[in-house]
Amino acid sequence: MLQEFADYITYSVVGLERGDALANALSFFIYDTIKIFMLLTTIIFAVAVIRSYFSPEKTRRILSHKKEFIGNILAALLGIVTPFCSCSAVPLFIGFVESGVPLGVTFSFLISSPMVNEIALVMLWGLFGWEIALIYAGTGVLLAIISGIVIGRLKMEKYVQDYVWQMEIGSMEETGLTFRDRLVYARDYTKDLLKKLWPYVVVGIGVGAFIHGYVPVDFVMKYAGPDNSFAVIVAVLIGVPLYSNAAGIIPIVQALVGKGMVMGTVLAFMMATTGLSFPEAVILKNVLKMRLLITFFGIVAVGIIIVGYLFNAIL
Amino acid sequence: MEIKVLGPGCANCTKMKEMAEQAVKDLGIEAKIEKISDIKEIMKYTMSTPGLVVNGKLKHSGKPLPSPEKVKELIGSEA
Image: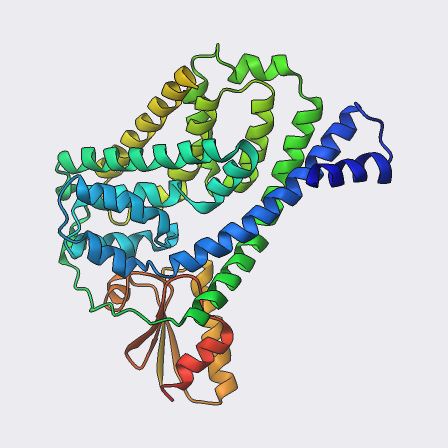
């Protein structure tokens, strides 16, 4: 249906020739833009409603005094549904550790929460299919569990800024919501997010469409194909500073895959983009001493690189 | 009345403060609106920012933000 509409615009309305590079690019652009916006709107809305039931306060209560392993698994899973933005990472971190959530469990949450987010999942689902989205989510959760356990085992509590342990925290009552409130919130949230995201999505799909129509396969194969063994590491290094632009990056990556970029490299790149970010590191510096901050980034980065090579080998 | 907007200073916190100011103006009440960015002070009330505290009571916390009408209602209920 959508493809026919895209073709109709490209060939009948604009009047381009079939097989033309510009026609390919245009048809691709129209098709992907409509599909992605439809998916984004419905999924973000649904996720926002679900999320309104999982406040950080509730999550904290569930995770408090949980044992290693069970705690890490729960934290990584709750990270997907608990609303969280990097600007509230500091109060959230303090709230967690102060109420007895083990440090490693807190990190499982901090890793999974930004990495396994609905925007990345929608974009992956829409452009690569649900299998890849599922692999991404599963691997992200697993990585968060393992990294959290490792950080917990390293016993790095003394590398949390000292004032965190001395903080006095309030009762933190929850503010109740009616179902109508939740729907209104979800609507506003979706609207706000789309307003913020749409330029990235359109530019991303536009660049993707250009690559789709014009960039030669040889070029991509050389740098991101299966024969370049450093591709995964380079992808992670490029991914870190690109935080929060997952919406714009996935369409570009998809076009590169069409030209020979391999899936493991794609997954590693996506995880580095969403899971590791400089702004988050700067914010976390307020609660973590350098040693713990570097350990956290190092473990996650190594984990992502392993994921990349692993999937390049099996996919 | 004493209103506190809690937040480290991200865009959402600024928006929350604007909504609180507008609500006070619309309701025609006297209120002191304070923006709290000190983490120790924030943690006394909530760990999800932005937060809205009216007369020492936490009225809203976290994302997504309430609508301007809801903010008016939350502040109005304490007036």
